[in-house]
Length: 343
Image (cartoon, rainbow, N blue to C red; front, side, top):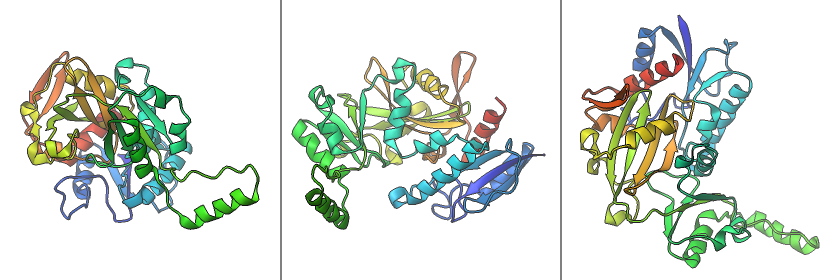
């Protein structure tokens, strides 16, 4: 029997699952084990902190991510996965896709390095400090309003809109401020002692600026697991300003009620095929003429769209069909991994 290694966190969890029991316990590990065994795979669960045994490097290694406060534990997971991949182990998905999880700066780098222009049709700029922005030529060519995003955050948190340069600078200072009074005092002393020394920036949290798309009434969230496409419509509510994300699942429209415009599923599929991954979550906007990828995640994203939907879209040859059938999140996940391994 083939073998799959699944890396779990310090709480023994794997994956992110809506309506999990107990709360925030992730996937049902027993169900995962049974599903993989039915398809000829023996599963071994290993904590991240355990030294891996002498495994065949061909064996797939699946892993979870984390959204802990400050992302300290996620940083540890990144070290483990990058180390394994660098040593030749078969981690799924690749480390670069984990790096983009709740890291919108790296997410934009991934998008902007795609060769297909239609996925780069929304302009974005990344910065590491306030001074990066102040010293750039970009500030002279910005069109307002403009969207500002913290590097981390979900459900619309850390996303702002500026209508002028003055507003933009205020927001950048707010979200990029790094506070360490002791360090700042010592840096001030360095400035006094060492002639010509330039003090470190007080604003060193990375962020992005992204083109604002006017008059959007909604966006669509698309989960792709292998060949299953789960889609839901997210309206923009006045109390959330210009953001559709974070409006509450009970206010969204799923499956056949998602009012999907022609071409959206093909656009999502083309973007998915740019990457070597079993699954992806996409935020897509449409202004009546063009589709835009607003954000995307490859791992540890929400799964409520699967649970709220009564079916999924599936492409047979050149036609999209809606299959009215409900699956458990674990079934959808395992199916996507198996299809990825069989490619």
